[in-house]
Image 1 (cartoon, rainbow, N blue to C red):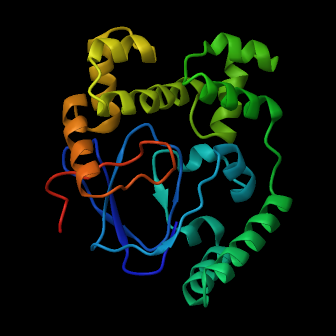
Image 2 (cartoon, rainbow, N blue to C red; image 1 turned 180 degrees about the vertical axis):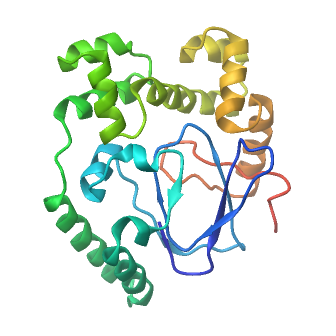
Image 3 (tube, rainbow, N blue to C red; image 1 turned 90 degrees about the vertical axis):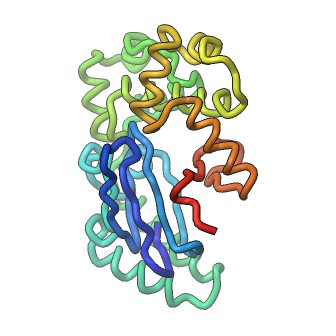
Length: 244
């Protein structure tokens, strides 16, 4: 993300005392917990959403180096990042900005490392099955040992297959929680051992209970949509942070 206005501030949703860090631009690795975001009421910028294995190719670095954190773009891309911030902010219109982004992404893609087809296939299967795929089957399909699959995932995805599966299970559960489905039903549908396991995992990853999330999501829908991906529930407005 490259922001053209005042910096946005981020903090970990699961922290007892959130520590807010301002960013003009950032690269965010994969996370197993939610992030709080705060701004002054208006955000203008560009966000590029990449599959983790494509981020591995474009950034040219092991993805586990940025797991669970956000890093300013220049710290990752160096001169490319500093120039990108300046050029995107100064560009005359959105067509010019997209052209600048396309040029940078295509150039870095051509120079970056090639992700393993086995990693792409395993990620795709985990996504398609909402995380409900045994690790042993993923390793067998890849023709690798479970340990080797985990190592390649950490390099090219950032998280282990087991942690990626946790994220996909939670992603599947979020719209069911927002729609007020019973916890026992969600647990069974999304691959949790039982409702207690689901509640524990949800709070550990989202920073709130399922019922609190449902309330926050209801406020979000009532005020304005904030989801960043079409067809996916990605965000809520949190009471206390909401400023009209």
